[in-house]
Image 1 (cartoon, helix red, strand yellow):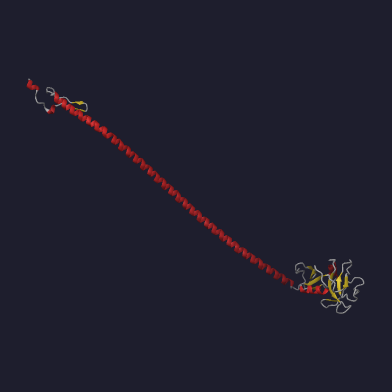
Image 2: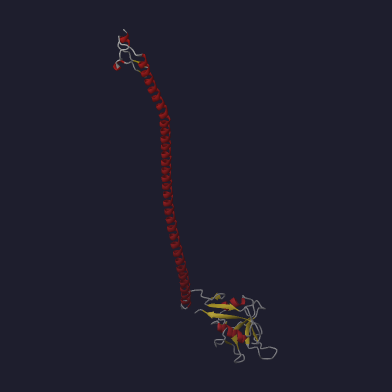
Length: 285
């Protein structure tokens, strides 16, 4: 019976405890308690070591996962910044293109304005030349009209001359003797006035001024002639004139229109050296 108790145990029938599970031997077999304990202790240590290894590996796995998450976040941020830079570059490019277009448009408008300004200056110069040419042509036409021999009433008198009938008249603003008065009229392509009608006499009387007229008897005493050499026919002497009654005797050889009477007869003989205003006449035809 003692031999049976110390029978060599069969390894295939030894009970092993793993992960909290119990495996049972076949009934009728003998158990070596020491071997069972040894096998159980070995299995327990193996389980403890496995649990320790798992705890040691877990932080590493967690650390690796955290590091991978940071890398993904950084990659996303870089990608976002890259896209933002691309958008900004696109906006800048669009603004540059728009600025270039506006600058080109402004340059074109400036060139157009410069062209218009140049054209206006040219037109202004041409207009000034045309006006000058028209003025010359107007003066030429006026001169041609003045040279016509028709009897139409055409005003061709110089500035500040007065037209009456077919003649122009100028009353001097200065006083000269009869000889100098005659020369002054001739210098203006005119003559001391020759009175050829009652209407003309009345017209000259209307100025109410003492003025020389183109009548003299200096060549032959008592024979009065006009400056054109024609003897006087119709006269308008004042009463008792001409009297040749100057202070030096018979020296009143020139005629004037006097303003002391309201009558049409206003001629008076006077010394030719006496200073008076004078009337020049320019005959139109």
